[in-house]
Length: 228
Image 1 (cartoon, rainbow, N blue to C red):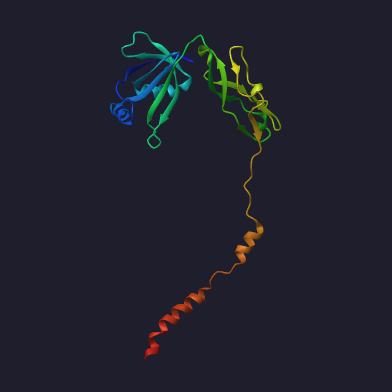
Image 2 (image 1 turned 90 degrees about the vertical axis):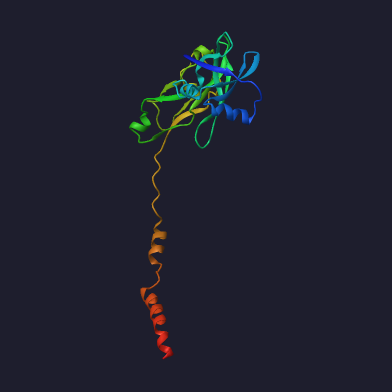
């Protein structure tokens, strides 16, 4: 999906090692690499807040935006193809940006959204289980959908919604196997009751008698009187 976002980037110079990346992050930026479109790769630094905004938008990493590199007169269309988070604090560490040619098809994965309440849930007491949450497609960059919606209201026990059942379009080529399951109705699992034999056995097992504990105390108290 083509957005109106413009991401400003500054070209990096010098060595591109871990120490250099730390210095970039210390300035409040994150290191990135731009490649693709038969042009040389360029190391840049960008504002992580802007990248987070794009990643959390409706189209997410499938957003195509204008990349403006400092010192380069022309903007280029780009998208985020890879990103790394710091595992503990969840901070962005690095991203890969790919130049996009709007007249050439690209492969992307888009989310599948289930719409409606299935008959198997509404009248049969089942649970809707979504097996496949993303589907791989090929299309022109301008035709990338934010998501693919599919109506599940007629889904009942014993039927499976497959990729072939998703709404198709001449603009989209589905690359995921057409027979792959997308969703189905499953039965509600009841909590297993404790086994009767186990409960009976636990009840029949005698605990240590209270009198035994008292006997030990009495013996200890009687020990000094024996010395008299």
